[in-house]
Image (cartoon, helix red, strand yellow):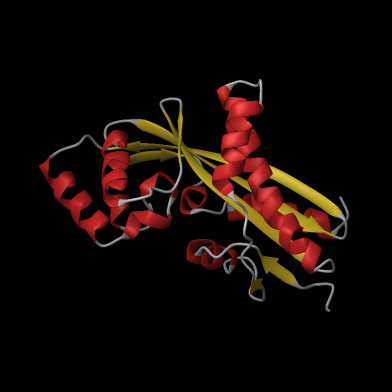
Length: 204
């Protein structure tokens, strides 16, 4: 196998599109990590603060995703990532049904939330893990937003997205402002990832 082989350990179409901005040749081999089980374990067993637990969660999930695929392809550079939305002391993952998706988005209206993405890169026995964080403020809830959210949920868009929305879709119309990396909100902070990958290749 070519030592320069690059693998994205995620089935997310958004991450695939974003990685293509910096790397043209790579394979997509999704990992199969039990995200719910890891989240429950960290929040139940860890004595750390809520913020530390969230950071631990995205770091450990992204690293385990990368490691799982790297074990199968030890000569490849493997990228794993995990994104969560944090709002009012809660971690908002992917909604389980339409009702939860609707309430999740409505709870963000007129509020500031944070999007945190953990990214792990495994290559040649080395590992690099980092977190990117972006603040997002949604516009206040009104009749127009309610109609748009209802249609968005009905079309099934929220189901595979942390926080129940994708900023690159209709949900972008509900955003008042963001502070940080836009691509991080989409699902992969490519600018930081590009730097980390280059440094690993140089052995730094």
